[in-house]
Image 1 (cartoon, one colour):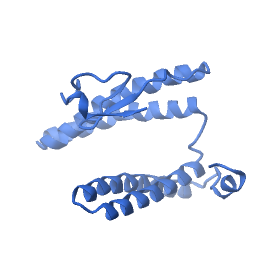
Image 2 (cartoon, helix red, strand yellow):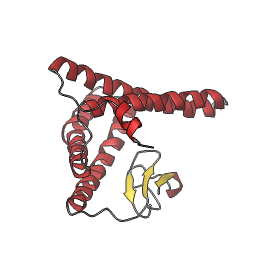
Image 3 (cartoon, rainbow, N blue to C red):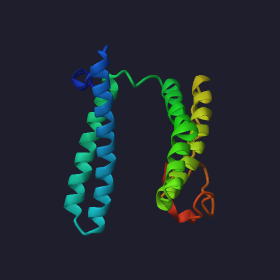
Image 4 (cartoon, rainbow, N blue to C red):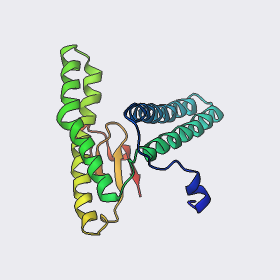
Length: 183
């Protein structure tokens, strides 16, 4: 899809003034959240028997994703694979080491059990993601790709596995049929 005309129309990385950078970061977060929210809304519309509304949600989600990508590109946030893996590792580390422990404590203190369960699922998955990104980065730095195996995600809790899925999810105990494979 990428040709010269296409590439020239995309926003390019740019030196940003602090206020513009802050605005673009906030816009990136908002567009990313909107894109994901609309995908969830599309699933619900399908479930409610509105396939055309679901299609509308998916299309607009795609547009929001394009906006987020343009913002990320302008902020200089798309780099070589090893650098992107390091950025991803650092994001997962923040979630595991700081964000989820603090958020889980708030939910525990306020006795919000379902929020605590949701955050516990996420935190456990983020630990695996952190390891996977670290391993993949080591390979990329050597010029190697990771093994050609499916990556599967538990639809309930987000547990992620490379290769064969377990009979039962180690995080939420869902059966193997609840994993989605990315081949």
